[in-house]
Amino acid sequence: MGLFALLIIALSIVGFAYAHWTDTIYIKGSVETGTVAVAWTAKGCYDNEGTGERPQDIGKFTCEFSEHKKDVHTGKDGYGLLTVTITNAYPSYMVTCNVNLTVIGTLPVHVKAVTVKESDPGKLTFSFSGVVPSDKLEPCHDYPCVFTAHVTQDASQCTTYTFSVIVDVEQAQ
Image: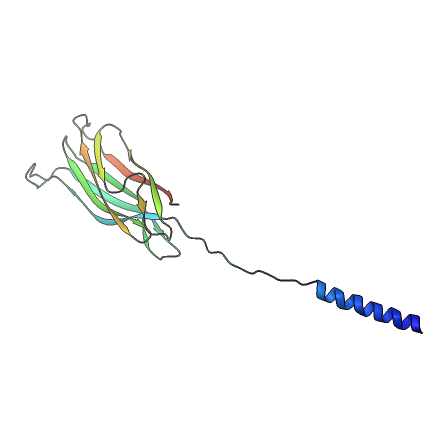
C-alpha cells in the first residue's frame, strides 16, 4: 500500500511539473499592401490654328483617353493611355496637350522613363515638360504635364499620325 501511495505522489509531482513547463502562445496579424498606380487625367489639348500663325482651320486632332483604371484603395481613377491622332496636317502644324499625371495609388513612385510611341517615327518632333526620370511622385497628387507634337517638313501628304506618351514608374523607396 505504501508503494502504491508513493507511486501516486510521484505521478502527481511529474504531472504538476509538466503542466508548469509547457505553454503555447499565438501571434495573429494581418498585412495590407499598398498599390502602385498612376493615370492620366484630363485637362485639354489645342493646336496652333487660329492663333495668328495660321488662322485657317485645316489640321485636325483628337485626344482619346482609354484603358480606364481605378485604384481599389483610394477610389481615384484615370486612364492608362492617351492617344493623340493628327489628320489633314501640314508642316509646322502643332498639337499641345495639357494633362495631369496623377498618382492614384497609395504608394509614392519614381519615374523610370518618359517615352513617346509614334505611328511613323521621324515625322513628328516632340517636346515634353512635367515629370522627369528620378522624380518622386506622392500619392493622391496631380502633376501637370505638357507635351507638344510638331509636324516636320518630312511629313507625308494624306497621312494620319498617332502618338502616345508613356510614363514608366516604380515604387519609390
